[in-house]
Amino acid sequence: MMAVDFFKRYGFGVVFLFCFGVFAPVLSSKMAMMDLDLDTRSLNKSGSNIIKQLFWLGMFAFYLMCFLNDLLKGKRNFELEAKARYFVILVGISLLTVVWSEYPSYVIKRSLFQLIFTFTVALSFYYSVVNGGIEKVVSCSSYIVMFLIGVTVVLGVAFSGDGALVGFSKGKNVLAANLFVLIFLVMFLVGHLKADIYKFGILLLLMSLLLVMTMSKTNIAVYFSLCISLLFSVNKIKLGLILSCLFLYLVFIFIPSVSYFFGDAWHLGLVLDHEALTGRGFIWDTLYYDLGFYEKMAFGYGYGSYFNVGVIPYFFDDSFSFIQYITSAHNGYIGLMMQFGFWLSSLVFIVFLLLLKGVDSRWQITALFVPLVHNITESSIYRDQNLIWLLFIVVVVSTCIKFRRDNE
Image (cartoon, rainbow, N blue to C red):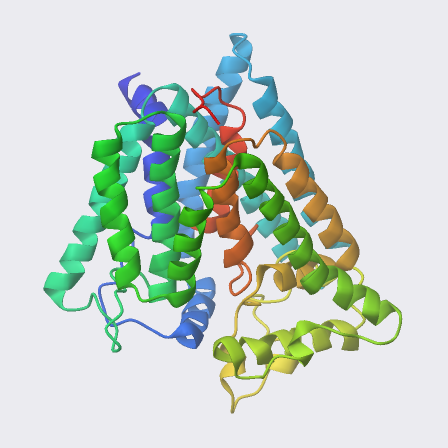
């Protein structure tokens, strides 16, 4: 019983640290963006995924039993159950693509993992909050992260060649994004649970300092912009979120698709220089061209059926170029297009909006800007074991828990 109580109270910390990479720290020299893609490709081909699968299956089984036990005892949270149904619909959309995917086994495997990941994160966070363990989870996670970064400093592998803090992550942008999520978990404590501002304020300051040391320009700029946005009213922040979401949907999904259907395709890759955003201009242009060339604009290739399937996509199969090592769209919205096409990507967006019903706090709304903006240059939404996707799930679950609200 003690073990059960421990994991119900602090299990979210284990899940969070696993996603952060604490249990598999990189204590060697670090890599550039394209090297990270090569590393991802190698990881997907290796047997190390067995450890990941066993971890998630074990955690999922534990929290599922806890949830079912609560149902049998009449302890129900109807809002949480409603959100769970939307997540099931999301996985159902992914499984639907098995019909036209050339790699149905990958669709099934990755869809089921999404189900396991989503529910494990959601239930572990829920139980951690309702059992009063979330403060210790966040504080201990912060100290563990800082300790490991300190270890990399001692070993002389904490910084990249240009002086950016990389720590035990694979790259400065990876560390910056992970610190982003940790910072917003601290903000949740202070904003929602009225945690000690002095105690967690120091943690927030230290995490912010580490974020600045990563020299990840985009992440730093977005972080301070979001901090400034907290000065505005909830309604203004929410309006900004809605307009930003609509704009990104139009630019990366709606306009490229509709213009293609009408015979005059336009997308951002056509106007960006190929070297723009560390080669992303070229990657985006290639992906949109691929969708049009193979007539996949409507329904895509299927969930998880484009990258990391054991075969290099045709337009990336160039043995004399770095593009052969690309393993993601480096844009979450284009990533959705590659997997779901226009129609299902639009449906996925609708499900996301339904999941966000009940978001009414400035902390929740501001936190949602993180996955929204992060996915402009990286693919992290609806992606396995990613802390940006974890943050989205946490925000969704937070709408199902009765917090002590600040007067807004």
